[in-house]
Amino acid sequence: MATEKEKMLAGELYDSTDPQLVAERRHARDLTRAFNNTAAGEGPQRKQILSELFGSVGKHVMIEPPFYCDYGYNIHLGDNVFFNFNCVVLDVMRVKIGSNTMFGPNVQIYTATHPLDAAERRIGLEFAKAIEIGCDVWVGGSVVIAPGVNIGDRSVIGAGSVVVKDIPADVFAAGNPCRVIRYLQPPTDLPGECNVG
Image (tube, rainbow, N blue to C red):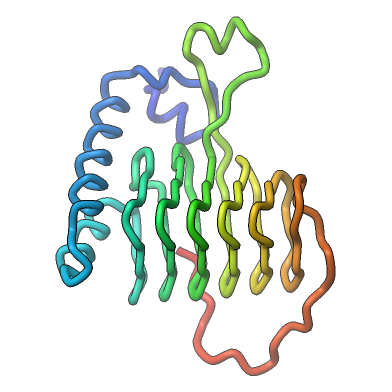
């Protein structure tokens, strides 16, 4: 029989009050509290905390505190990823973020969701859907990214958008719900590789 964590990671209904999951969330809270209490000049300490918190971290990652997440180990970052102040990642399932991707302040990324059935919600069941954000993406401030969304390489998401469906590569998209506004010309000479966490 599957554990509650195994169900969670498989995207099935699970009980979030399971003691193992409660302990893992508490560990993530301890690490994010330590990270959020660091000073701007404590780069090596921040790097050490993030390497313990996240599933994988690329080179030259910069996160401005405060930052919050559920578990941490489901977050995978490529190189040169930047999060501005006050971002939240509810990483009940995998969140993969490609290299050279930037997030404005107050961005919220939710893999966690709840059943439509009130009886299932009442007994504490929930589930999640993985999120993947490509390389060279720019996500504007206060964007909400809903469970199960994929955002293609080099796309730009306008500030305040609510992204509830996949966004293709090389577009500017905005609004609530977020939709493609126009297509962008893909660059032909980007240096380096596209690493997705």
